[in-house]
Amino acid sequence: GRVFTFTVNRHQYHPDVPPPYVIAIVELVEQPGLRFTTNIVNCPIDSVEIGMPVRVVFEPAGEAWVPVFEPA
Image 1 (cartoon, rainbow, N blue to C red):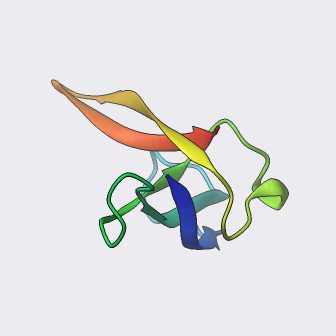
Image 2 (image 1 turned 45 degrees about the vertical axis):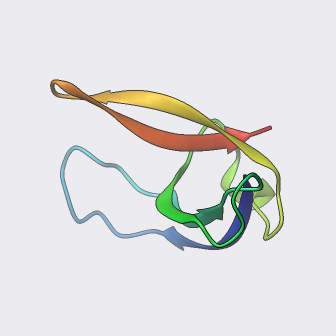
């Protein structure tokens, strides 16, 4: 995928999620127009940019796994 747009959250809204973190909309290259609201992980915040290629990874969230994206 590619980062379509993003924002950096610098406020702590939940005690289990320390700021700062990136909230992004990622568009899949394989299916233009299909976009995910997600987090960008394993990347310095200042390195995230629109158009950046990313790949999916999964993080545990209780009994489920959540798709997030990291630089490709």
